[in-house]
Image 1 (cartoon, rainbow, N blue to C red):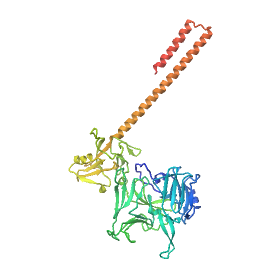
Image 2: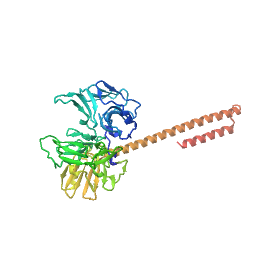
Image 3: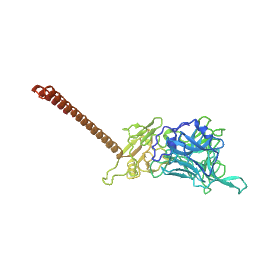
Image 4: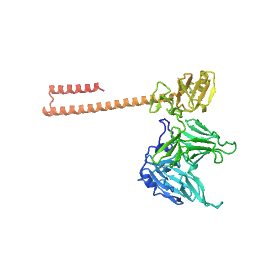
Length: 506
């Protein structure tokens, strides 16, 4: 599968599972192992992970054997319940993506009417909290808990109590409904997809109180209208190669077409929110995943392609907002620790941050950014400087728009227009921490070197004293215990000379 743009995203403390499993390649044994799994699980089922299995332990298959549900091994020692696309070994759904269990014989999965995974050592517990009769995997990868049969219409159809399609992770597959109550979350937890009244929105979480929208697709309503009060919208991936937006009925209020639009495809079609924040569609060609749709086509239009305090210039790539710093390991060294208080120190009344100004910059996705109108750059800067939740501002001299950045500074856009000026706060603590830690390391190394030198000198002095004593004893034995003048003077002078040389190197 084609991966995301070479973008930089800052990880969060509770990383989601897909960030860890993307390092795995296909395992040839997956299809063979899946062939031995059951096609339904009844009450009383129980399983523990097999320590000899390297990647995926199937527990349940669909009738076509294209999809399998089971234990997914993560990072060698951890485990998650997952639904896989068997031909590609690609995970499509995870039971609890924010918490990992251990790959251990004490970790247990069972079905007692609820699907439950329990790890007593880490106290991880997840349950569907249902009272069903069986667990089945459908031919579209939907995992369902079913109970009895619905005979109200004389149709022999089981009642669905719970299904994985209602709890997507970062992927939607064809025929899967995505509603206004659901959230699609990228594997690193930084980006999400949600529905508004008449649009699809992509949002970024930049360590601030609220999410920032960075991409919005509004319904064109060409074939059907959205009627206020007639219910929320939902979207669905159509097998004919498009993402449809619906309110009621089967006529879409909007169609976002893919490259495979109205082409006959035999393989699975899916939409995924990638770790760089882009929304992409892929289809399975029989041997690989083929890119079919990209929501954000330009790298610099992504939410943070160059990382914190980065500058993305179309055609030139990534650099740093601060000209005195260099892009190292995908990050700009001037970025400081994140804080919700970007004001002066109340004790000293001095700014706890330094100010960086840069011309020729512009905010990304500015049509969705908050702004004020100010008559001058100075007033725009003051509006941010006096605001404890403001991390920076960008002023457009032509329009008078002052864009307020109320989240930690990410990537800005580079332009050739010097009338667009940026004002950015950088916490001083970052540089002080680096300096102090560097000084501490230096002092520690110096102290260690001095101790080693003292030890070496002490050991050398001990050897000298021992050799001196041995030589004196030898001379005493040769002279019958009487030390005559020349030998005594020679020995004393020689060792004094050595001790002085040794002392001179301390």
